[in-house]
Each structure stands twice: as structure tokens, then as C-alpha cells.
Length: 384
Image 1 (cartoon, helix red, strand yellow):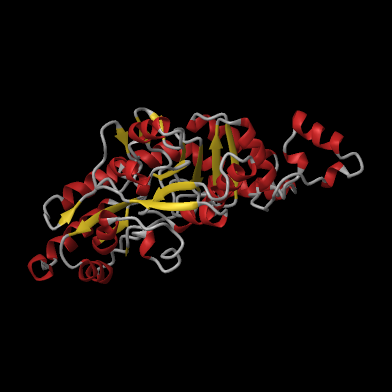
Image 2 (cartoon, rainbow, N blue to C red; image 1 turned 90 degrees about the vertical axis):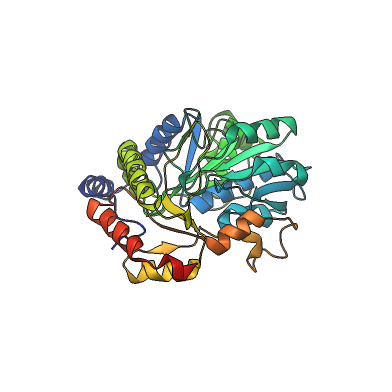
């Protein structure tokens, strides 16, 4: 059996969680602050704000941008056609107009087609399945057209482009710590940014819109301007409850220390799988751009024959598969009438012909041998 994901935590993480439980301080506190600092240092940003999921991280990014009037309802934002639903939903939920940009054979947004989607106030790029976007081209486009570059790196923790970690390129960026991701807190996510104003708003909005979440001078100003309201329950901005727990943060701190080894093992497994798959011209592999070091989330392929037949065969033989995430989002009924019409032939093709199977640090040599034998036994001519 080659499963899609596998447990990467053990006694060290359980000990960290137990220590927090026994302390009695289980809601967001010092462990969260420590994890945020360590994560920001790892990515290379000034601020990190932990939340309860990667989807919440995307929500918090957009909510903060709207609250600070960095973006306004009615502004046009370019988002990836090949992505996950909660990359796009926060944009629509906050009254932004959204165009879905087609991808290329890296699976990432194709920078060459962005000019046709102008004018726009922001580009929300997603690093799909661990493969970095062409950040040089995206940054050049955004600089030339006065756009914000936002980055969804929920599937790409540990990857680098030109020596810098993904998530560092965006004005604000998101990460996910879901069970199957590069590190896990079971559920959890992170927002990173270098802008202290956005970081402060994100912290306040994460916690109900409390003034006390701002801290420092800003908190003092809010309290001085509202002397008749108890400062412990003073609300100054829109709010949610997106907070993590101390157990999640403690687990994340242990997992973060293991990330370099996890990323290297994923790279080694990917190389081994490429050697297996390269014997089959019926399977086309996504490519990586120069200067990119992917941190592969899964092993994606484009099947030139009958994708559904091939997927069913793999499943029957103990190799779990999935489509390449949501495929072309504009094809889904939830989005058909919500996004602006665009042409997305590559994303449409990937939605029809693409699939992935598991690639994680716990893949064994026996599982790689099993994959090789299953592919060798497939009737490729009948599937054409």
C-alpha cells in the first residue's frame, strides 16, 4: 500500500503536548508566541501569526487587507485557476472581483498571461504541490503594475526559490499544518508578513477584534480614545476566532525542527519516483523552473491516456490517488457565476488528465518497488 500521507509525529510531539496539558495553560499563549518567532525566523520574515488552519490563514490575509483599506471591495484580484477553494473564497467573501489565471506545466500561474487580466490590485499566487512559482516574473509584474503580491504556500513549506523560502516573497503569505502537510499540528496554519500594521490587524482580527491584541502604543491609543469601555473587552476592528491552541503550537515547534530532514526525504523519494515513471511516455511530469528547490507535497502526473481508468487501476493495486487538487476552479458549480470569465485551457486539461499519488517522508523502498511493479504491469496500449 502506498498511502497519500503518513503520520510524521511520535513520542517527542506527544511529550510536548502532554507537557502543555499538564501545565494547565492550553489556550493561545507562550508556546504560540515561541512557535511564531521560530517560524518567522525560518521563513525570513519579521512577523508570523498562527491560526487554526491554512484556510483561516488565507481568510485572515484578505480580512486584514480589507480592514486596513489596502484592498477595497470591488477591487480586482488575480488568483490561480489551479488551486484550492479557500485560496479564492476569502476574496469573493470580501467583495473582491476575481479573475482566475491559467497555469503552465509547472502547475503554477503562467506569468505570460497576466497582462491580459489587467488592471488588478493584487495577484494571489499559490505554490502548487510543493513546486515554487516563478517569483522573479511575478514580482516584476506586480512592481510594474503596482499590484500586491500575495502568496499561498500552504502546500510548499520547505521549498526555496533563488535561495529564499517560499512565503517570503509575498506581501502577506499563508501556510498550512494539516495532517498531510510538510509539518503538522493536525490542524493549523500561519500568516507571515514584514508589515507591522498588517501583522497587528491580523492578530486583532484573529482574536475577536480585541484592542488588546494590538499591544503597545496602538493599544494605549485605543484605550485612551474609549475611556468609558473596559479595556479588557474593547473591540476596535472586525473579528473572528481563528486562534490555535498551545498544544498545536508545542507540536509545531517539534515538527519545525524536523522539517529539513522531512524536505530532504521528500526530495529523495521524488527523485526515485521520477526514475520509475520516466520509462512511461504516457505519463507527463510537471516541470520546475530554474533556481527552484521544490518541497514536494505529492507526486503529480499528467496521464496522456484514460486518466480515470489508470487511477482506478492504481487504487485496486494499493496506490491511493487524488485529482491534482481542485483542478480548474472555474469549472466547479460554486465558482461558475462568481468569478470573471477567463480562458484556462491548461488548468482544464490538468483537471481532466491529472492525478497524484503519495509522496511523504515515510515512503519505503518496498513501496517504491511496489509502485514500479504496478506501473510495469499496466496495459498501456489498452489505455491509450
